[in-house]
Length: 324
Ligand SMILES: [Zn+2]
Image: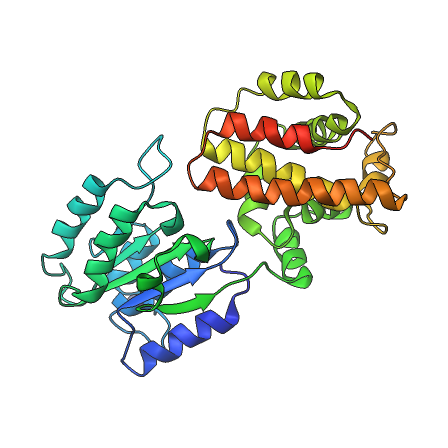
């Protein structure tokens, strides 16, 4: 089941109903909000044998293969294992696959995850596919940061913007996962309207203990000296870009909460047994320091995504944190 994104999904369904699907679509929106699910839903409807009003029937052979994530006409391209980007070699291999005709006789769909992480060579290769698509090929490109995409690609695709889920839908999602009370509030506060992020936190072993430890660890940084902070960060042994981005996003989200006068974070933490935690940002000067640090964090996030050394930049971020 997909939560939210009705506008984009309705648009895609209407396009299918009219029998004129765009051959290159880009879904832009923050990480872990469900862009991939929307892409899969569209691909499923496109390939379905008995689609109705632009939606898949859910019963036919094609739909069954989609449900098993094993449709021969749906190709997936993600950053290479252990790497931050898709390599040109990997793209070339997919290009060859795209040039053959569809197994089920309809379309071939290529879904590219993290297009904004692809370097210029891969983006140029994709641009060529967009400009001269093999017969029946439909590209669905997913990205979080529009400014990292070549303007020549942006001008040739159907752009659809997706956003964080509204509060009510996130609550519905949490209720579906049988979460309520303080834990639901805490997850909502940490993950905003990003169901994928909630699932990621829930997937941690002993997630409740682990989550509380992470929150304490992040907040304690604010009371530490730069040296102590760097030691604490080194202990975490972050060894991938994904890990670095997750760490930074978590910290930024907590800083945002600390700066909010009506935040429930500390009250929830107290009820869950963490009575000593508190960050007082009621003074304007402190709040200003916190906001400057958040701006720096967002800037550093951009550097990380552009492939810069993450250990160096995370330490730079620690340096910018005020000591409260
Ligand atoms: Zn079907």
